[in-house]
Image (cartoon, rainbow, N blue to C red; front, side, top):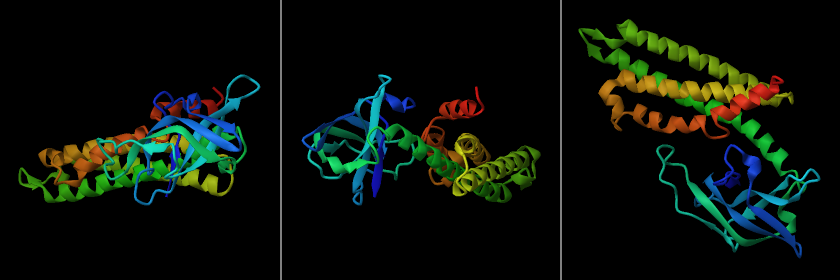
Length: 263
């Protein structure tokens, strides 16, 4: 399994501000720097990480960024302890440290200087996946809430019969259906080799935000039980917040969409 080493302490939403460097000396890349919030680099089956690094200067004076494949176990490449996270606790997420890490010249991924374009393309596709993931969590919230609301009796009848609850469920179902159609469209555009950056950003933005809303409503519908870890909606609530952060924050999605609109 591979990992994508993009984010750094000083390069989050501004991914182009990468500080990690890779200097080509005697047919080897010498990598120095660190990455944070990197997932899947430290599991038992992790085999490599693709690292974004500054490999020179462009003609316009900006940093030239390239992607380099770093196998696990390479001397000079180490990993910090697993982060203790609010959610996604099953996912292995760590800091990566590179100290005079020597990698063969051939481990350059694609052309030198193409890294920025490459990781933007990766993020576009990943946003469709994040949208799909968000819809899945939102659907799980709805399924759990609907089941609970039909079983939970208060004031002599199931709480699903009260408008206050039934309207929550109706709104959840409507938002989920719209989000699902949005990521279907973005995926269809990508599969058919059509421009899809705007649609992917829209799908990711909307799906991630409504998944947070659905998780919030799911806990509310469950009442005190929703606050207990014995009920799945408690975990959904903790897990779902990162969907509005990973693969570009909601704010970044709005920037992408606005640019695609010509703003």
